[in-house]
Length: 444
Image (cartoon, rainbow, N blue to C red):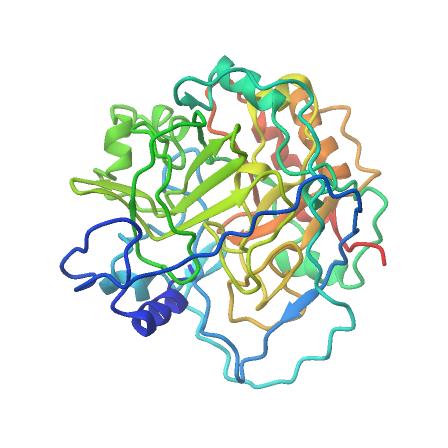
């Protein structure tokens, strides 16, 4: 839903340069050289700096171009909750996607015209120092792409170190102080709104020598340019559970879904994990065409580093955060332990973000709304013993690591891998409501 901003950037940067891909009539006339600098983090740094959480708020006057706002659930089919079908990310359709969610209906929210000076922020945004930690055990050999919903993937994931141990995704927040405006934020999100689980974010694991290919990108300004390791069977958001459990869609093949044969739209995230090179590739609005792959945005993350995206940059997720590290996976549920924060969507967010987020996705300035990167924690006194073991594993993680606000969406929902092996127990999460959570802030 951040399309309006991207459209303006797109016009400002035209003619656009395509990442490792020939130009296509209607999108650009000739390529423009583009250079990208990749920062290689220092290895074996003994010093550990504890990051300070900093709120970054940008007033309307003199602010950067308006953000792209979008819905998270994809596509609009069971078991997902209803969301707007998003058209193909072409320049002619960009303006349609600037929608701010207000459950249960959607409405367009125009940029605020009230110019109000924001109070100075006394803290300073810091980037955590990289301190790579070794994996618990050697990675199994990877000779060909491995789908996420297989025993082979379980073994690889169990051996991976996904970001250093001192990364904010692994921070134990069980004793963090409650944010002063926690009660107001809980009320703004909707205290009676149930917690839900979207089985949306699948991924594929690739070997270290996987062939790379180009992807035609619509938003170059805040994308990491390729080429990228893209297997032919990379899953699109929701595959396979959302399709195989739908009477109307169960006949679709993965190729049909990659090409969006039924024009279902949605955010259509695609995720590729390279464990040996410790790289993560994430795409927004991914689609296969007769000419090859195209996407709206591409992000590359170094899984061995604590480095954040550039300040003000988005990612395939609205907040500028990675998606893969936040997904609840089958192997974690089987082990009975999740060692990282989750991601959550909210119906409305504020025009601000807090570390580790680097991007906002709203024009609303109500201070009672959550910022991108806001961290919710399940209350420590919430009784979880009457839940199934797998759901208890999720609830324990929400008490210890919490969840980051990562995107706007029609529902208050965490992301779970669309793995058919996960039993039908996730509806138990509906017994929780927003009121069972509190917003926390890092201690100073």
